[in-house]
Image 1 (cartoon, one colour):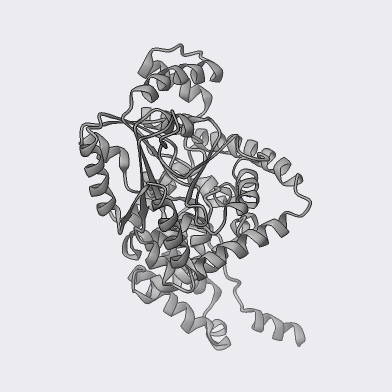
Image 2 (tube, helix red, strand yellow):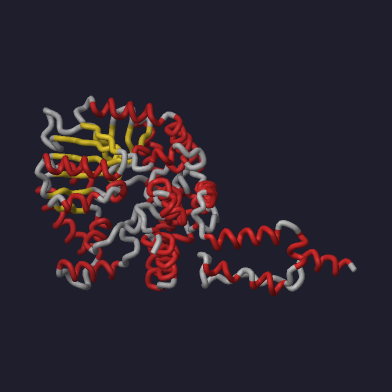
Length: 457
């Protein structure tokens, strides 16, 4: 089964799962309520978004310069900077670091970039236990699943689902409250923090002028993951760069408001170096792995490279009617929703993932909510065109569209064929991905021009 066939199969199954839909609608409704309050704090949120968008476009114009500045500055603080062209190179670097430091346990703060390169699987293969410390990530890891959402990893689970999971895995009460389950996880993680040899984080922002790693989170797990272990590994996509530390005053509230509805996230930390000689806390070593993994492929595409401005707030997922219907797992990628549909063909190849660019109604909600004004629908359309140009769409679709063009390009075509025949001609679309649940239009017996002429008589 191809990725496109699997997507269609999984989408059809989950779209009519009532329990799943109710859970997602409830959780996103809570998000919508919070974000509405978060946006109300802005006097002019559009001005803030325009300013953030301008900064991110400046980054795209001077990407190489800012990355070199970042590397030079943070290296001068005693941080080792490594570059990884793809997941394979990143994996080799991680294997080497774990081996050199005899790592048997690592604690990991929430990071979609580490999901992208399957860090947990690499660590386990090396005989090193990898523990997720974000509560949502911890839940899906215990369940043997991947994150469902780039901001809310366990969005697809109700509190009852989690209580049942913890009862099965840890023997806690089936009637545990969210507070009780959180306290249980807190006690488990405290022991992991203090015994881990390695702590791993991603980066919300790479700050060029100070050579800093900005990590923003709500649980304090990022700080705990870097306070006790002797080695701190940062794995960050090279698009995370911003020019100046002073710009965080703009990006922090935008990310928080669009991501969770908060005025600002609870914990905002900037890492610039390992532990210094006059300090008693922090890691002895700090290593930054800067990951490409297809990002420069995207950068070279003038129609799509604005997607690199994304700050991973998740707003486009929460606003997307397709995501809310088929959920995060149907995409079968690290990044789902509209931004995932744009990014993944460039990161993992059009041959296997071009179908994601067709998983959109093009309603424009994603563009409306994006805090950095990425023209997602325009990019989705350009991706669709590239897919057709590369002959990656089904042959039956190509044949049908040519037939439609032949009939519809001139009025005589619509006038010549009777309505019943034109209606019958739409049936094959059900078998090339449009789906049997969609009602196709029924053509009138006579075309509009014929009816108009009759009216004039």
